[in-house]
Image: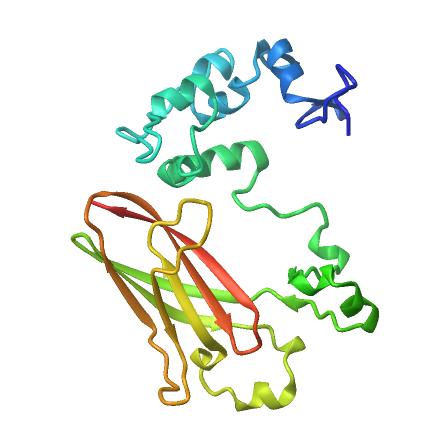
Length: 266
């Protein structure tokens, strides 16, 4: 959808107004939203766009007269980009993706005020009886021959549970459970599995994932000589900091599942 202000750029800001039951919507691109920077709201006149968020975070000046400011969590700061809670309250945006973890506890009241819930419930109500499943798009969809022959299979996403333990600068990662929806699994394979770990053929860990290429820094896999697989991996960090640990699991069917963990070494 194009921006309703300039008609050129793609709209990325969606503003909804409900006054006496009458709903109106406007879609703006980021540039126009910044240039206009003011949105007319019925309860607070005009104020900068970023105060839509900082006001909900606890800034009484943007909540209107009579609002009572609640004490903000003290000492909160992103360990990656250095943004403080006070700076977020001023600019209304985060400095990096790690800020969501650093300010996680303070975000819950914000989401509840903005959305009425801290979890995204979707646009389709449960009473509609719609069964939504998330499935992985296989690489074979890029192969014309495989598509024509009907060899493409879409597997439902698996669930991977991981536990962590930190002792000083040493991090231990333990696979705790792995659940694969049974619908797409051949019956002979499904009945032969007696423990969840038997689904796993290989798994690896990137101890300092930087949102780019996965680096295989630790691995455990099955062989004919040793069919068992380790369920715990450990790493000794040389320095303190916040690290993204990426765990990749390959199952016996060839599908892979990844999970990212935010770890703080003190």
